[in-house]
Image 1: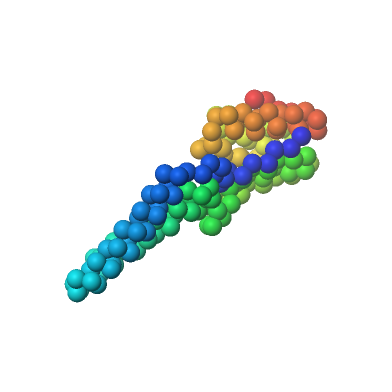
Image 2 (image 1 turned 120 degrees about the vertical axis):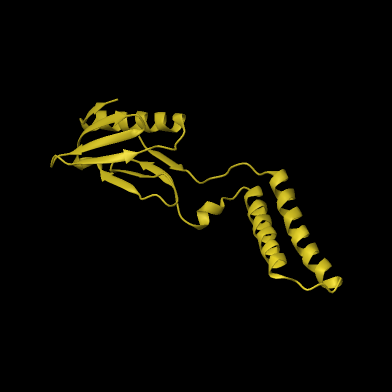
Length: 155
């Protein structure tokens, strides 16, 4: 049994976000051209708004096509197989990692897995921030693999 989930995927395209993003880009460009056309001095305040609208427009358009901006900064995933458990719940979070052959027992408490090693140390996997259904999938996979490997599991 195996579980691989990319937590940063956006599967649905959104026409509204695309239109909103393009609208922001048009407003930003129109605003700068309007100030230049009327021979107004383009003040730093106007440049700040220009950059804000360009940045917002680019992000909304990019995510409207179904891509995640967070992917540009890192990964967030769940990977559980017969050899390892690897969980990284957010782009800025630290990856949590353990080999199955090191585990003696597994205990689950409210969005936290506590895995005890043979050397009497524990590793804690925090799952806060994940959806309930996803946590249930993780519990099911860890329960099945631990049963196959003869590891004591209490959920």
